[in-house]
Image (cartoon, rainbow, N blue to C red):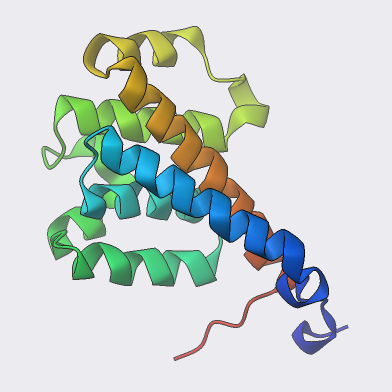
Length: 152
């Protein structure tokens, strides 16, 4: 079976795809209301996509992050963000929380990660970050299951 034989979930169930798009718009609005910068929102989406090996979303959110003012340096070091000084304490907590939600099957979002996030993020920011991670994981699964093409 090749990539062309995969069912495109968006085309197979357009009403469900539209519901995911609508949810995404709400999640994005929640992130904006919580004060998360547009570029950083794309970095959070990108980080989840990197962990999920979703090439389609990695490419898209890399481009979107740059288009919304993120620097190529922050984009480049994202996989190794812990070893850099490019991110604020709040951003580091958001990245850690995004990774924990994305990798929920590994550690069930450890209390230590949540407690550290709660030290620097408001409840509104935590909710926004978690919803972003949940939504991005949904998109990653749609794209990966459908084998969205990624080419030059």
